[in-house]
Length: 451
Length: 148
Image (cartoon, rainbow over all chains, first blue to last red; front, side):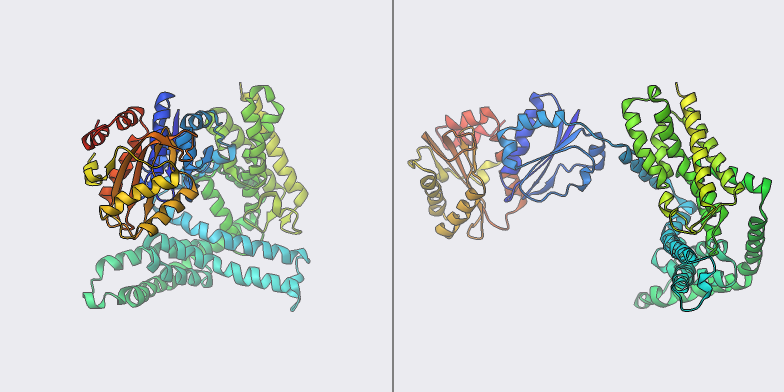
């Protein structure tokens, strides 16, 4: 067992160090490992690292100054005055040893999410940066458009009504920024601030040329790499270096990206877009169901990893045109199923799960209804061969049903919390039914396979 | 530990005469003042007492370490004193204090001195160090008590 401690006193001359030493002596006597960070007049010594926090059982804060506790996030903690550590270090250590490390289920999920974030690099990282900046625009715009639909699907056509205003804000405002923001922040991720200008302008051109989402991605990458290239090749004399970020880089990169979008990228991508739109609209019966199955499998396969994100990004792209989308509906539904399936399994096969797992299942339920697919990760990590296939099957079923029922969704996120908005979901009852059926399939499969 | 750097022979007192907490603080500060380490006795005393009011520096185990950080301190300096009979210093463990370290630090003390003080504070937590201090008869004994 390893403990952590921080000691600090107002003057930082004596008590900080006496408390540290007292804790060290007591820990030695009780045969427990301890690392003590002292925050005194000499500064911070023996600083506790993120690695230490990971290994530690609990932390003792013996301080009369303000200590930033955020780095101990989640660790059980005893907080006392510095004098208490001098007086009764042994007692403090004993009570710290008795503390329960309450690594909650939700913590684990967010840890997994953080890990995932660290792993992504290269082009995928740039794309994800763009997407993550874009999503809030899609959410805000999508919900406002859905609210406009709540007055009736064509209510916004009446000028001067609230429905028209909502449509203006959501569709005319937020949605018109989606592609520029996506492109701008892809370029930003590649080339830092100078990337924003050509990226955003390229994004605007893409929207104008009908190249949409796909064109925006191309514009973003092009802008980023063009800026990087210009940064490396243009060498100005020292006295004129200040012109680089305000004049040279924005002007040249925008010119290159803009011309490229208009003369090279625009037309072919616009026709690809048209074709894809046509294909999506014409999707029906078998092929729609197949797409639903594939998206479902992807959403559940790595629960928030690159495959899941690929399917999700594709779905958001279909939404960016401003129309409620069947693909978006299938993807959100399929993404909700894994944690919900896990939850159901812990309910119907109580004897196959530990008490902690059953408790964790409840947390998974809430993550599921919020469309946080990562909610299934701790269960999947513990038993991947049984859990992952089960949730993939359930999500595929849900994806297929949602497509078959032609359910549509106007917003890219929100789980069940967006379902009550009238017209946010097309085919609400059947949509809910798709989610429930997939959940039951996953739940039963996990329960049956689990030993 | 280079305790010599902040504790000079003329600032050890093996027979403190004070009977109370206030008296002993004054007695120790007097030694500091006579040695020219502080420029204003009363102002420094205020700082030390203010620090005592936050919570006592009578850390128990017979030890008290009144201290102050102030612009009236010329350079980091220690005063060491022993009281044979013990003084009621309002200690955390309720016992009488026998060993006294008065610590004076200027506002801009350098790290070397602060590090020496931090080591001193750490060592005071060890029983054998305290035993050696209480039975010390000379300046050398005090210095040696902190040697490994």
